[in-house]
Length: 451
Image 1 (cartoon, rainbow, N blue to C red):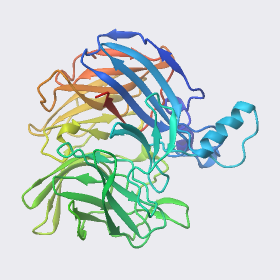
Image 2: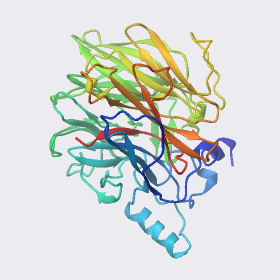
Image 3: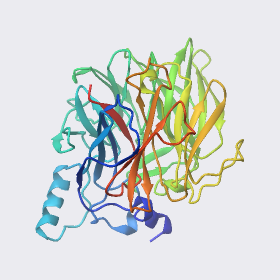
């Protein structure tokens, strides 16, 4: 088995084998008293029945890890598999000690969000979203963003803070169209726009949302029916699609043949869409995320001239970009991203910041000043995405709030939930919630306030 495939079953990536519930978690430091809600994060957690020779990080049943915080206390920790029908059946067979049939059970494993007072686990490509209960039990598959055609939303649905609408891009492998789906604040689908996508379906993992537009990335990473997976198509012409949020035909503009990982944010400025996003040079092997070198760029989409201009913001390998979601689809100043063992083991810093050489770190970008601050962790403290939690006692300033991330605590053989001040980013953590078990490196999550 190639070494890079073993990597994603070992060390900080290794799956856990039990579901755990723990109450009244110990805390070092002090949790902000105004926070009331749950920090939830999703990731693949294979049940151990996949073929290791073909395993890569994106495969496997999803597991959500959550901490409930209220009045300065960490009231509980829970981890639960997302029980699709096949994952539920596999867990029941394991409970009875029965052998598993060939194949690997799957369930949503990329993102967990809150919308319309409900909690949803997401993945893309055709598997439906699954609704979760407040304590992370699986209610079942649901039609969030679904249409009569049966599409399911992708992993990066975005809420417009001005309207409360949830915007999603839905696609299914093998179909010749994608869809922009708008779900209202009450959870009902209010608008669906078809976007023709002839040929092999590209990897539509993320998109950009501005005040007036949805931007799709038709990149050379296409699903190959022959190969049975996403693969780099050297002959494909990259392009971006600009779709009016009000509906209407998509306009395609030529773009450089890059891998678009995730978007930080986007906004409109007259006839220009400004987007900050994570990109990497191709061709690349999607089965080895650690070999990808993603960087932060700013793209200016000139609608009048039909051009896309690129500018590098930071040369350091990074991903999992986040903002204060109250500024989604609006002009923003601050962004946060992660340097993780996923991108090189160990990480070697470079670019314009030669004094920084953390193996694991979180970055706060001041995009107005053109500066960045780094909060570093030790070599063993694996950290990935940090979600922003607005300070409920603040005045709504863009960086008035906290960053939350799971961080490995190898001395305990477990993990901590680390809470940082966004305004004192390089200072010591405000709090560390000590979890009783390890949380593997995973994908995406959110702070979901009880209100």
